[in-house]
Image (tube, rainbow, N blue to C red; front, side, top):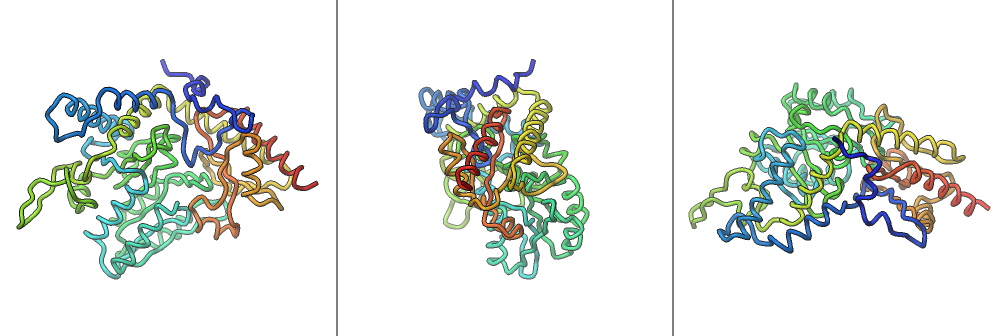
Length: 407
């Protein structure tokens, strides 16, 4: 029997505290999610009972820690339906995972005159690494625009793809507008032109159904801390054929096979891409977060969050002078808005005075803000522990700020 989503809030100890003597209303989940007690306990238990460096030791603690770490790799593979645990590379987060591909793919496959395509909706983490790689390799950087609804222009993508295109990088869900991109269609278009695709799943893997084999993306990156796991741990999934072809991103211990003055050979997958001592405790925390999420029926979870989003959008639409940005066919977990005449930063500070945590600014998406001709937005973002009361508090808080600043 699946766990009830309505009981989830009780699992997160931080949500019971007050901010400025008022109950915490946490709506900054796109930046990072809070952690359930089960994840906190898993990290603590590791340090209390099993702490040891992994893979290279033959004593009991090292063996125990290694088994726990590698079990999480299997959990991640099952969670996203990868074909093999060997296709799962642990990183520090989405940013490092994308940089790994940008560096290694660029070294192996990008030459002067080649082209890389990204979307205008990208977080800087899926924009800047490709821009810099194009500079290093003498390649051309191309951008898919989005329309007035916040949806990618797929006709423009079709026109951008050509025989010089070496890779397409796109997010599954926009972190600033919440647009859910038609990844299946995008991947199909790219693959028809023999172009591999990297998908940034940082804002999707905790909200939408996740199946990398069905998606058919060549690379898929996400962070633990946006799916109730600790900060400092993330995942790169890549098809085996690419991992076998790409050179390592980092070098040092663990990723090697043989080291002599004449040559260096590399370890087998996935260790070829995991140089140095890894973040064992937080990988174990990621495993605990996956166990936690697996208690829920994911279709019910997605439906719950979708209903919550619609409820929030409805409340905000009733506030005079408030504008919600984007009107995509499918939006996930993000409510981006501004109020006429009120700076987004001021709105965020005054909401915090009432215990309401939102994010303000560009959200690491300056190309999005430039396209919208604004300096930033107020972004409220949802997680499974949010409820109608949180969104009602947000609406009351915004109305209060309007009254305060427009007297």
